[in-house]
Length: 259
Image (cartoon, rainbow, N blue to C red; front, top):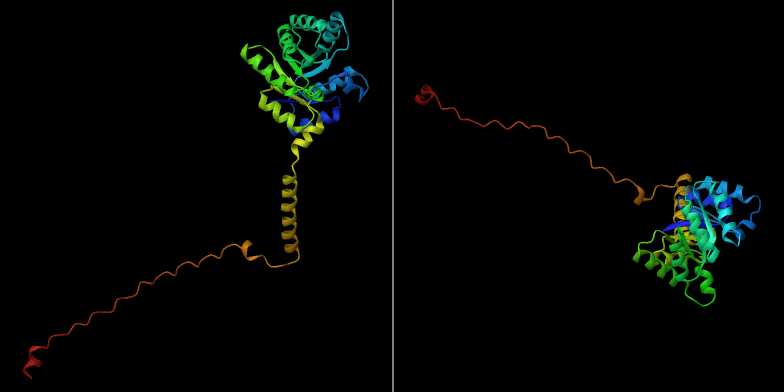
């Protein structure tokens, strides 16, 4: 599953890019309002940080306006994907942009039927909002699972992007549901990294290491377990001992026998 960062904050994007896990970025007018400046400039800077898809959302309410804004965004960088909300004008705009070779991300999807229509209209990405469905006591992940099944059953040329991710469990469930992509705030990514047993393990290893280093610097003898095993001395070479000479009795001479 690909991981996109849901933000318009360039510093956050640069941080996650250094982790080696960033596959793309999604932005929207609300996220942009938190950083301000020129939307075009922000998008260009983001596209410089990642070669993956970068979603830029239109704000026009009519199809002509959506196509005009989307066409402009597409000129900013080759990895721009135009983000269009699910609606009748949105379907038309996605169809027209596809005809022009411009990729789109259909956002604000809350049902499998909406996703199916967006896929038919030519959306490259389908973005069901998991957290917002959970907020109204519906199972947002059900829409993700249904859309993945529809896309695979009919071999549709699109990908399911799980959006409105609120916590690490959402990420696990999205991956298990077969989502092709999940877009997530940096805060959720950091929670995915952390675990209390990991933290306590790192602290314990560090304490033990510091204790050994402190003992060594104080001149304490090395603990027996840390000493290298004593080497056995080489076996002494056996000298070639001379075999004792065999005693041979001399036969008495004839003259001795006569005596």
